Length: 333
Image (cartoon, rainbow, N blue to C red; front, top):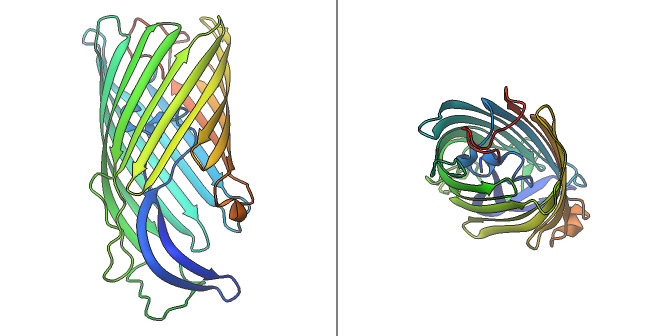
């Protein structure tokens, strides 16, 4: 993903605002619950997999509202089709991701911008089998504020309270849709491949570790206007791992040349961490999605079982009121 939440082994006394640093650990990426809503955030190779000339998204996440300073994350994305060649059955897309994250007593946060270039091509003449490859580069700044914190150990020496970093990533995705009743998509990506250094302490090295993610989703039109969409995704980042499994049910309320309306509702389980519920509504080119994580991990006493709330809006810039499967650009994901 993009930026990070730097993990320290902190001991904090709220009575005297005292901070003791025992042991610096590694940095880790944040995550969003809603993988499918804005897929470029999960895998850069999904940039360009949309109908129309562009796709624009905004997502906001508020986590652990029960604590005094909740974790707040905002991301904005923009994607445009640079090239789509009908006769060559391929295309090129440019994506931009802007990201801001703030968390905790130290107001630790990160701000970053990434640029994604992706190339996709149909593997057959019927345009129902696509592969996409993407490269990603980004610049960011991470930092925190200790102005209201007293260091419990006078030997602790912060060389700086902010760090600039450069990151690179890559991704691949495959999409298969033999007919209107079924599709399958797979994705694999790696981010922070250069392990950016964001050290704050003298004589210490703190890196944003490489993150590898795998994703698969399929849709099966079980009835004329109802589909089921099982999901599995996994992320690995050094000692940290995350796995989610779930399923959505989608109702197609209107499928005409002038109106495309659908509503979906799903349940997802994040292994040993949270139970998630998500609702998504689509009206033509506009998509609105709400999600809530109910925390069921060992951190429940601190969070008071209050998890995270997310809201996302995505808009596709398209001139076509109805999508033709047999024509480029590639199918909608």
